[in-house]
Image (cartoon, rainbow, N blue to C red; front, side):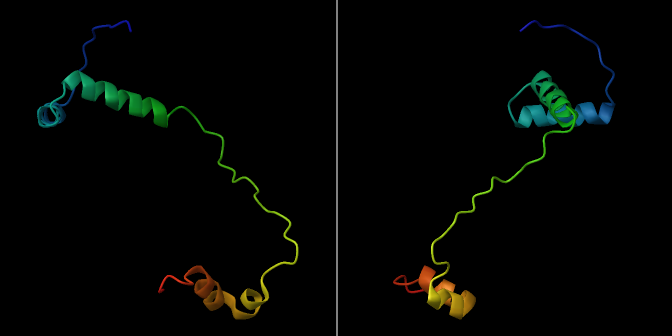
Length: 86
């Protein structure tokens, strides 16, 4: 990694706070500045491809078990916790 020196004017109160944070986290001012700049770049990379949930449907043979179809959520809960004291 090639390094380059540069000069940046930073608000005094911000610089004081960041130096304090660097001491608390036992890191350097440079590390915190680089972390912040990388975060800015990540958020401004542009729109990402939207998340699409993979279709995981399947063709079941006879559908729901009769006791589930007739009993609704209470029946489903009873089956889930069967033998577990729930």
